[in-house]
Image (cartoon, rainbow, N blue to C red):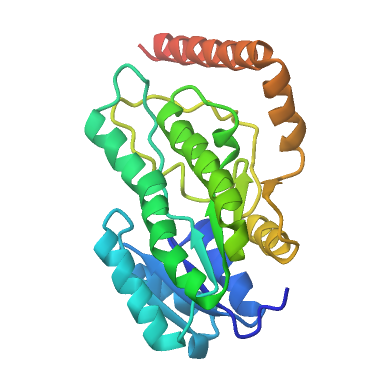
Length: 274
């Protein structure tokens, strides 16, 4: 699908995957609106993306519907249309299910899930008027495989996967395409910026380097052009997801053992230094 002249809005576009998606769409001729809660960071990302003659940066906290509606109005004022909306804004919460503060849990869902749902509701009416459009939800492999100490993040992504796939069926007759993107580990500051109220350790193995945000962006572009239902990146995560679907106990046993070994190593290190 040709992107020349298309208009794309990307939430959470001030860094990482969001910025990479904004750049690749702009490089292929689209007009792009970069959104972030911090207008200054969005503007800085806009200059890194380039193509400043057809990109704009706006502040938007997706937890508030009025801000989404304001962005839509400004996008239409500047570009006269909206073709693609990318729900990428999200943050992590590393904590045990038993001890996570409920205020942080609700805040996570307000951003990762309800913010995306509010945006979908806001853009669907406009896309129906225009005769079609595309909604791209950036989810996670964690939306297929729950991770210890990232259970609430996983839950928000499981929910996003379900809503996106249901919406795809509901909106097909209106020529609105919904794409769900599930990256594995990505080399960004996402993990470093995650909320850690009880200093829990996430389950990511130390040897996993992750893929680049640019690789995710390329997968998003290809999936959009081919009108895919869902894309998992990297491809090597497909058998892992399938293994969990078929043998969940085996995968959970492996993760539990890995966590136990990590805790034993941490205790040994503490004893050696005391």
